[in-house]
Image (tube, rainbow, N blue to C red; front, side, top):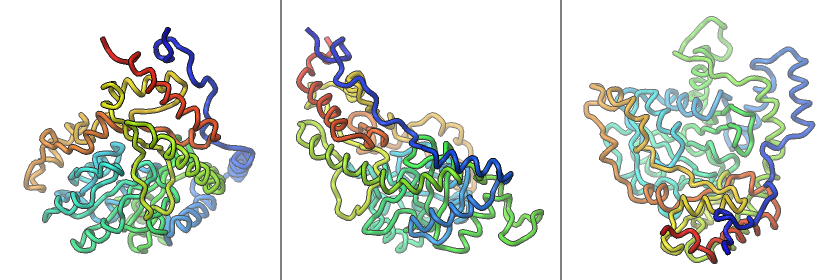
Length: 409
């Protein structure tokens, strides 16, 4: 008689995990106030949210924008990154990290990740620097801060810009300092799945006034603060946030600390349980990470400890048991077909002076993470109870015990 739900058995769990997004009367009232005010574009809510969120991330200035993607692009432009420049980044991230570089006609240079953190490997960053390198773009994957001590050391030594992709890392801290405030600029997203959301939206934070003014101008049709409406000083466009989004985000920010604490408690509980199961490894604990946003709970899967069952088949089996586990990024960014679109420019542009061929890139750790190891649990699951976490453990233990049912003939 089969026991695994994927093969027709009874699932471990049939009730849902906590819904996302979380909202209540506060969001409804905030939206109603904006609606009745008649000021639906940029107004006081946007200004207030920019100030509050920047302060929350230990930064002086904030510029709200339409998405995390546009935050990255504007930040690169504000730093003067453009034609023929190289930007070192990670291939274990969402496509926007690379496309933002390509859209400013610069070249993404992918380096490998650390096997036990899935964040960019600072040693590989240092090895990849050339005379064309102008910036490092680290990603705080899943809310886990990258090694900003080493990244900043390398950047300062080589006179490079640092733009932090913190689109999954609201409130995360490295050695007591919040991410986004280490580099020249930090970028955050408020997309639907994010730990605080307005459906779409993003923000740039910085401690550099000149970069703030440039970012503000680029997101607002090239205008400058205090100047006339029809004076355009930079080649900006309209990447502005609405009052409706800012009103929601002001409320979302109020409950972020409470939610972050809950996610951290459940993540630590899962770490203690899953680390005891042969073939599973949570990402490495690091005391320098003084706060983790836990947008994703990422753990490593070893097929050899599960009778050779692939991570895709393993994930399918867990989902059948009622646990929403994802395989995450299925390929490194340098394997994505969209890169063909940029083959002529900027990848082989005369201003670059050489051509880059991503088909020849092979980075073992990121390929292992994508193809055989990396599994994700989304942030809303971590808002559940300890009993909910026990169901995750029970589902994995059930699969481990009955792994022969997943073996192919």
